Image (tube, rainbow, N blue to C red; front, side, top):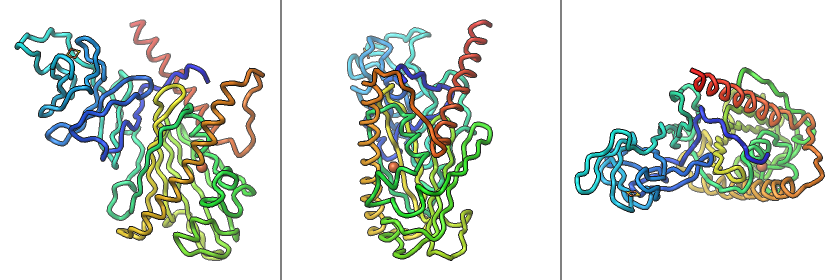
Length: 347
Ligand code: FES
Ligand SMILES: [Fe+2]
């Protein structure tokens, strides 16, 4: 996995909306240093962090109105990257601009488009639960030292909850029940339905389900790195309404920082207990703990992959199918992007 090439003509989560204020935030996204900031009009912008003057960080400066002013020699740029002012009123050369990345604020996240192609809003994930008044969201963030695909593998195969998340998400039926996986175009849908199984600590604590339960996990992955997990539990024997109200969903964006690190943006949202601070705190503590466990195993896995000189490949079993499917789609889209770029270069 060394030197991963990232998909470019895609959206990535650059920040949680609440992180972005008029104080510029520097962040590496897919190997690109960027600065994210909010103008006086409330709109966010994403520019390269490399000032086109002498390549100092734009993020060292400050936001003035809707522009950012570089902290080195004070040149100002708009959110579109156009030079707005050079000290001494020096006229800006026509080609003097900062690279601007198209961005959009939606569902509590700031998404940025990495590619040169025109941004395509139909490729944004529908993470509506994160800012819908009928849902109670509990967001979080982790910086993880691993390739982003290892975290996609992790979330697309929740067999691991039994072994990694013993005090929170484990419970009966998960490891024994096969995952039904369906590939539709560029997307992957997977589900696991479990009947009359032991409850899980999170359902005991959050919903008072102490005995046997019926339980389901539904996964929706879309490129490049978005996953919605829909989770439900009811008392065993209740009608299983997989298409009905889930107990909670987890929306996930795994944004590569480098080949060996990622920004993990997540939010768990529930359609009940709105304004219930105790339920918020319970979800926050359980999911923080569970995702720290994921981070720990995946960071150690990455180190062992990197230090392995045996040449042995990673192996896959049926429960790895959705992660493998996601990797296949990413490879195909990378080939398609390379072909498009080749065509553009040949024109
Ligand atoms: S390096 Fe930014 S203004 Fe000079
Ligand atoms: Fe996990």
